[in-house]
Image (cartoon, rainbow, N blue to C red; front, side, top):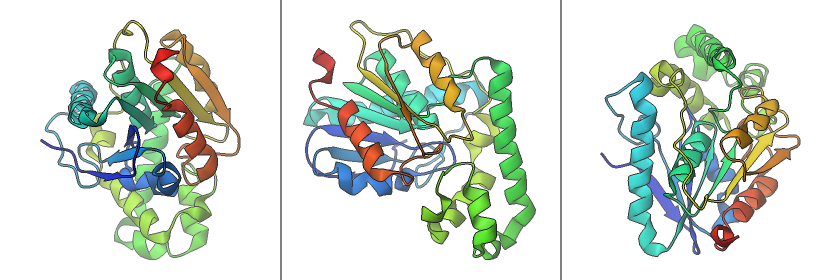
Length: 265
């Protein structure tokens, strides 16, 4: 099974991985800021966007995602070392590949998997289930309801600090994915285990929005337990999906995290 992806720009290759219920277009706000300096590969995860799904759920799902992304990285490395960046679920996957040594560097924006304990993970899942229930209550009326900013903006607020920057068309696609996404149905309650670190460790940057309402900003403190060498950044004024909240700042973090010489430091 192949993953659907777009390629744009020139320079070192940077693979971008979105979060659960999103798709590769989530990176559009920062794309034009990256492509003058990076060959950007924006990918749809299995069962997201235009990529085919995989026939596994629960604990088996995340390891399959890791292997599919590793295969993509291998395909892309003819252009030189491949860097990776991800948001939320994509952040976890990027860090998993970094731990294995599959990439030259990894940058994670509010990565999943760094809950303090299982109860904290369960609370995050409750948030998604509540959002899914709210979307389900709108049913076929969701596209019509979302034409009202009084409905659309509060519905998007858990993910974005500035929901007014998300187009009506993208908001409707996101609410549809919230209802149908198979990873949300049976993958995000699985253990988010990480492989042991390769030696020498791959450079890692983790950036966390201070206004993240899905995965709390305080979770950043748990990153160093597995990645003691990680550079950890607090990003003021952005939410869980920060690319549209502050494109310039997020692009600068992605570029700094994927410097070609990063691995030699």
